[in-house]
Image 1 (cartoon, helix red, strand yellow):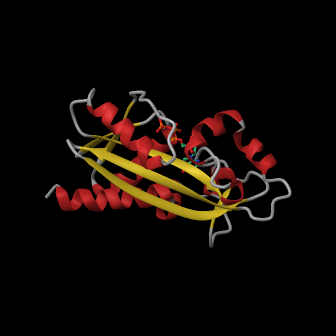
Image 2 (cartoon, rainbow, N blue to C red):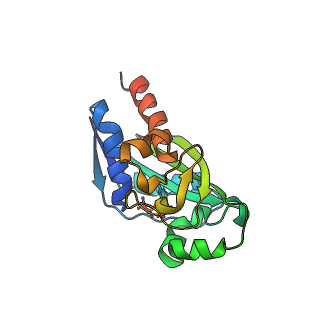
Length: 184
Ligand code: ITT
């Protein structure tokens, strides 16, 4: 089976490929820019994107909308994570957290699959924002995010390790289980 992943982010593609490969599912990147509306939740952003794409693509596809939610910043950057990553960057986030004791944060991912109907799969991972960047793997905010119970950041893990505990890995797991049940 082949699955089209609509994304501009090669990091997301790498993670989905590594996740699905052992299951015999090939993931390929479909570059088809879609509008990401300003909304309060990742679910709303994902749903709007899927509806928009479903009017333009003729076969099943999925997308992933995700974000980093920092508790001391009341959930910022959250739904604005992509924009904040491009503008403030990791250094900007570290600056905002200077002198802040509560470094707790979580990543959330909403994977939305369209096959004529919308199916949403979600995942979350809790952790903390460390004080300086560590590691060169992954993408985005990975070098400063250390998941709870681990000594290393996501950027210091292999893709498989990250997938085993990450927000996206969890959403992909729910998606894979659904596919297994529904594509018999
Ligand atoms: P597409 O929308 O084209 O898929 P994107 O990078 O713009 O790619 P999002 O709109 O979902 O993706 O933005 C999420 C941002 O949150 C992303 O750019 C990263 O900065 C950050 N992010 C999401 N998942 C992450 C992860 O697993 N590790 C590190 N940062 C992540």
